[in-house]
Image 1: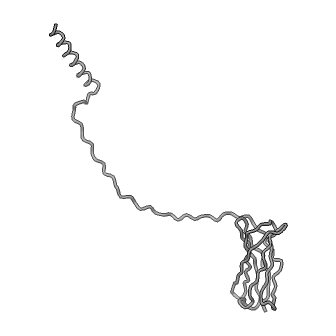
Image 2: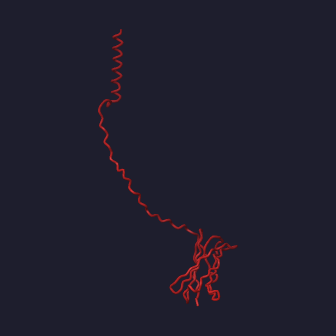
Image 3: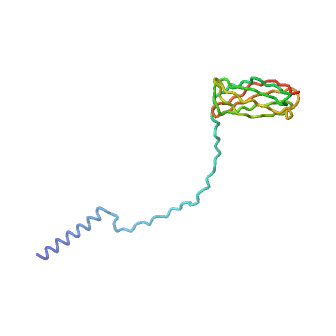
Length: 157
């Protein structure tokens, strides 16, 4: 009986070992060693592509020059303007006199009024202006609005 036990044990052991080779047919066979992959470790320098930031679209401002006149006693060109289609604080008004192939500008703040926006009085010294005929325009600009007036003729004595 002892021999029978040894024979059965040997048969079970042989069956279990051969069963593994049926489940894993390549078990015990030499495998091909993996081929190393060459990768480029140099990281290329990033290139910056210039991106243009578009100007935000502003609502139109209707700019009106109420008066542009030469005050010879004060020695200035005075410009009074308003923005007629809204009322807001925080904008700027820029009066530009163009005459004799030369432009001169002055910028002031604006303030809200009951129904519109008023530019503070703009004064340009006569000494920096070319004598003769010229044109005055006023540009309004704020975070929300922007606009340019029509030109008004002025003669510098």
